[in-house]
Picture 1: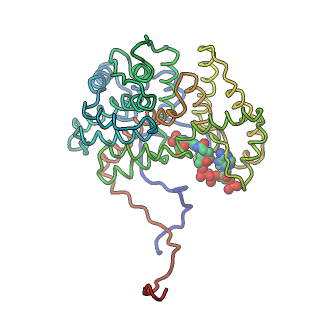
Picture 2 (picture 1 turned 120 degrees about the vertical axis):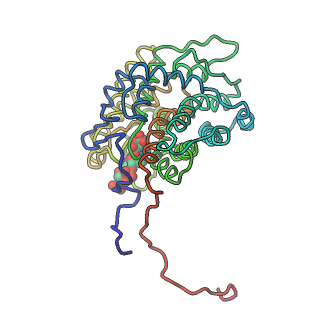
Picture 3 (picture 1 turned 135 degrees about the vertical axis):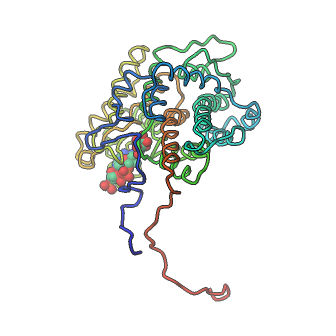
Length: 393
Ligand code: SDX
């Protein structure tokens, strides 16, 4: 084709959009949300504060933030009729499948305004509804799998504590969210909140570019995130570490397997399309691992295996030459495990964290009136040929 530049497929060097939300320098390992460093935000901010920052571009003052939080508490419940959809899922339904179905069904129950330029208040209500209902839907996807009664939101609790309450409270037992666990969750959700034009965010943007509702675009992003090469990696990391543990802790054997081109095995939680240095989120999570497990009095042998694996891989020429470092998923599962999140919920946690980023990116593309996404291709198929009747084939 004329006019097409032959690019490395998989959007490896494509600038798909212009965005003011997240800055990422893969060589220097820099990540900033609206100009604020991830290190500062993870240390000093709350997840909802960061959500506001990503979506509206500024850190909220006290009055604005109190109203934002209040609006969210008013919308944490979902329509009673959604329970019927929900009750229809078998206990074997994977929480990610339940989550994406229920998020998409929000379109049927709640008006979703599309144009932040024409009707900003209506779009803000759509955004509040999604931020408010996602933890409820996520926790219920877990309760469904456990066959437990659903916990309705307890709005006396803050965002993270309320989610933990809906996840772990049980009618016959008292449940109080542990502040150490709430703080750990707050930090993890902040670290996952946005990450420029990754696979699931690009999915949200391209679906949103067809004027699909925010709910539909986010449901599409949830499904893209589910893949083991993307958000599904955090669960795969734990399963990989457990496999190494079960195999006598023979780390070198798995490092060698990951290098073997005839073997499909990869070191999960290692490598990144953009970071050719340490993923700054992995650095923060690795430190948080030690702090949180110590505070909770937990010794997890998987953490020792992970640290040893990192040490061996980062001295191995195969990984060094390809600039393969631990990414956000390498240590996050160890914290999720320590705070009681089951592995099948790890990617749901990633979706919960990434939600403000998806919302911010969907809102940005609608505000900038981006055209519908329609990439081109390099055609490698047959040249023109004539139809052959069936009897002659
Ligand atoms: C996330 O894009 C984002 O921002 C994503 C994310 C976000 O916040 O949204 O950061 C979240 O998805 C993190 C990544 C989670 N996935 C994993 O940990 C799965 C394991 N990692 C790999 O599959 C891989 O590193 C990717 C998918 C993350 C990146 O793949 P790329 O950029 O397409 O790199 P590639 O597959 O072309 O690999 C380049 C080379 C290849 O070897 P050669 O052909 O050069 O010989 O590196 C090798 C690969 O075989 N390689 C690995 C490896 N990752 C890459 N070899 C062993 N183990 C690995 N993990």
